[in-house]
Image (tube, rainbow, N blue to C red; front, top):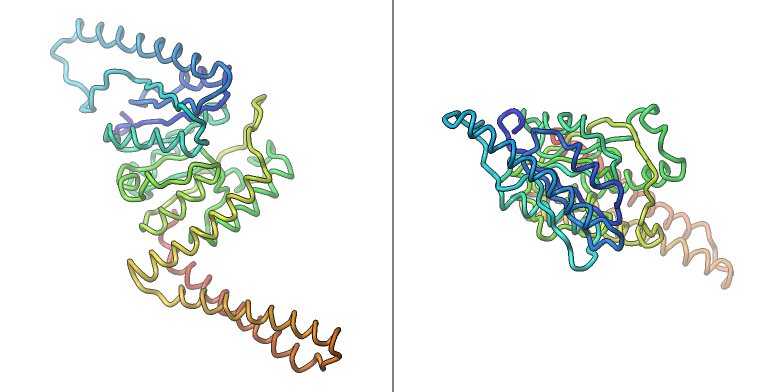
Length: 342
């Protein structure tokens, strides 16, 4: 236990042979349950997980037996007694990192753990800084914490310029989609979440591709959960990324657009009412009409020799008006969510 809270850690792994075993062995002692999820790897990841799990679980049972013999009447720390510390889980088909984390989350809900963290099986996440993610949740300041590698130049030193650029673009798009306007580095997979948040955000429907973290942020906001960014350095080792970037960008962008529309409907029209949803809708519609008007004006001027000034000016005015509506909607959204970020 950690500060009277039961702790679980989900370790998603896909082709992490040579890394995942060390991740499991270096897990802090206060972690009660480790869900090592092999996402149908094609190398020796599953064998490494099973061997390491047997090693750790065997050692735990030996220590527990010795303690029971030495202090048979001693009270426990109040936490639940699990039959094994490491739970190996293997997917029959590859479901993506989000699918692996979803599997671990559902197991954590079944075990009724107070806080569940996520640490990748590639060894990039320092287990020594896990308390930074747990403390805001333990102290009731946040329901979800996530790493942030962009907050300080020193922390970004290990990140390539191309990766930093892509992360910055996705940060901006996720700010709009999720409503967490102060949040940065949404792609960071080092996270922790409270049981209350897990029970309310509909984990069963969580996106299973690499955009799972962006998807979860939108769901957290729609259900009124508070989040906190945890500064941490970027660490990259010898592991190879399995991300197909063209497919990744296409899928995540489409998912963010769908989730943005869903969040506006769920939070500002169904669960509550705020005119910012109408501002977004009206502004987008006016912008679209303005763009069509500009295109038609140019076409008529080039092909029909029609006057451009009046028609083009009116279309441009419509476009600018629509943009103002969208900007007002963003401002209202920022104000509505200001208290939800620590």
